[in-house]
Length: 220
Image 1: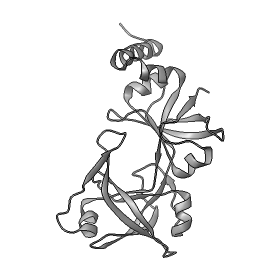
Image 2: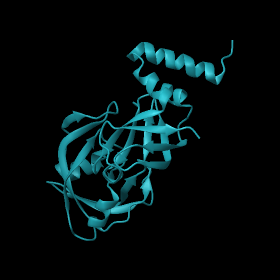
Image 3: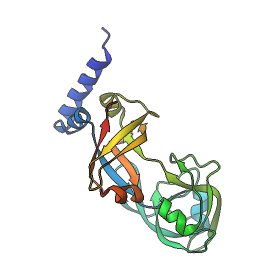
Image 4: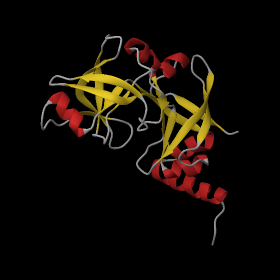
């Protein structure tokens, strides 16, 4: 027996309702997505971690983040750009990655005098250079500084419920203190993802929302 897309979506909603009392299914039905506001942060690879903190050093997990397996670390570092005006106490996030990456806001870029592109996390080719200063050493990234694009994390079940797939873009309505609409929001679907839209502090402050606010995916 073959199911239509509409039938599959209804089955997914039923499973979600059985799992969590209907909260996720309800969210998909009305298009709502919770928001996570992302402050400036740093992802490190093993080589750069050891340059900055010393040979054999390991990250110290401090707090789990909303996405499974991701965590904030006790470690913080200092960023320097051509302006030679430092941004201190920039949080390191774990786990380690294959390439180091720095995610900042446009406001941060004015302080550092760097020109990071707006990119999907992990897409650092040709991005801006930046210098990272740690307690034991300095790393000069030739590329790796970006402004993260607005994106929504979804599980495969969420993707079916919302009628989208990995890499799609959607329009999102924001009903904060300064109501607006965001276009070309990237959808990222993975089995380990939990439903949440990520924006940086500039976006959140501009519309007057914070962590846990709800935005709505617009059906067009």
